[in-house]
Length: 245
Image 1 (cartoon, one colour):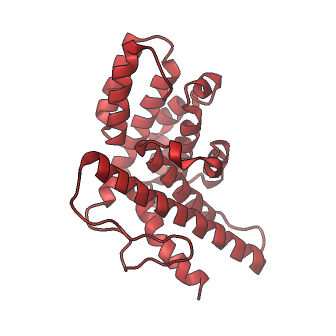
Image 2: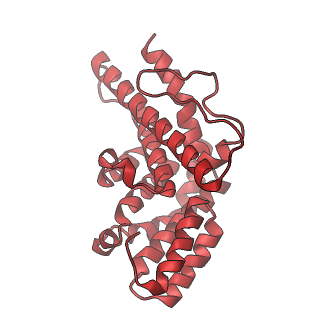
């Protein structure tokens, strides 16, 4: 978020912290306070409400094939809020990029894989600079790379060319490896900022190196990274072995 008048700075700090903690009920309450106390924040409030509705829905209905039809009807309102952020005002408030990435997540949940990839491209996923990412957005970007890989796996090629097939498999693997690298950074940052020293750091794939253990995650971290990243972390070693067999 960009710098705002002092009247809202405390609220925005609380919003940012609550987003990092995935405390969506509190984010929604704070967004309503922001809407009541300040003017000119309509798009930001819409973004936060859309984000909350999306994440709360997916907490109850994970983005798996069995839930696609439910997502197509249950995420209509979240989609409407996020789409209002694809605007000049959304760009000024630095939420348009994030709205594109969240819309990609929403569309992936609905089984609309081509549309999801389109929003990832519009959000400039491949050109993002990691150093500028907050913990929350680091997770969103990690999920976005996972979604890119998982969507590319779902979309059939229009050719039977072995070269094109190998090229697609490499694109999928690169996206999932990138998602894993960012997931690792996200977990490390969350442990550092929350002072959580329990557990171990997961060993993920990086570059051409396979994972060093059979499980890509330590116990009790799935709830922190969510099912999309969990799926990506499970798929990456399988694809690595397949591509190198």
